[in-house]
Length: 305
Image 1 (tube, helix red, strand yellow):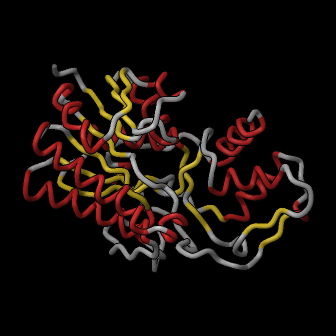
Image 2 (tube, rainbow, N blue to C red):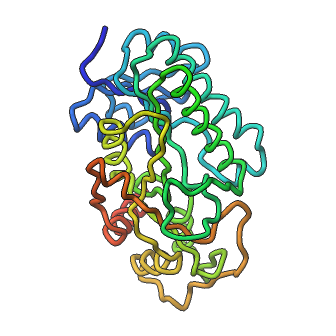
């Protein structure tokens, strides 16, 4: 049975899967969530939810719903883990996405695919802001495997006519995220003593709230050319880690003197990021949650955990 404007979200129980599922439902899309994990709170944000073994069960789900769109959010989202076990990262990214593309080719050729890629494909950029035309130069297995997935999306578009696009997501955050800089900083703010971070604080990121990522995803779903092209998904603002850290420790009433930096970098991490989001803006995207508001909301959520 064909449902009007249906989106199938692969990896629906994760951080971004939950945010995008909720947003799509609120925008009136019939939303099918699937994941290898049992559903948690994210099930409340989907019209339908299934726990599946993707290698064997994606085809029947596609055949049943013939979705308008498919968003692939599945896989590892940890650069450090990819350095420790690159084969596992490959299996959970490139290998899995190859299967998804081929199932769509065989079963639901009209379904439009959005692949959740990453700014990690850029590595350490030579200039800012980073435009999509910049040649990818990853510095981690995670980044390489995301790039491989983008190339496969182009392959299936060019050779088989599968409609594909990729979203190069920059530094995502928001309530519910229990890892990376926001989570780590909040945990350290609950400990006695100095709050130590890696680097020197001048490193920068282009942070984008999960709700804005969901908004951007829908803009791409409805407006993309689907020729295998990629879109930067970011706020377009460069924020230093020092600035972010001071915003967060202020929410805990902690003195700036308690914040120190180790001046030691981490493997696989670029130094500076800021995205050119002109292409995304041309599809109607406008970010709505600035870092000050987003940080306040995150800390309030964290304190309730």
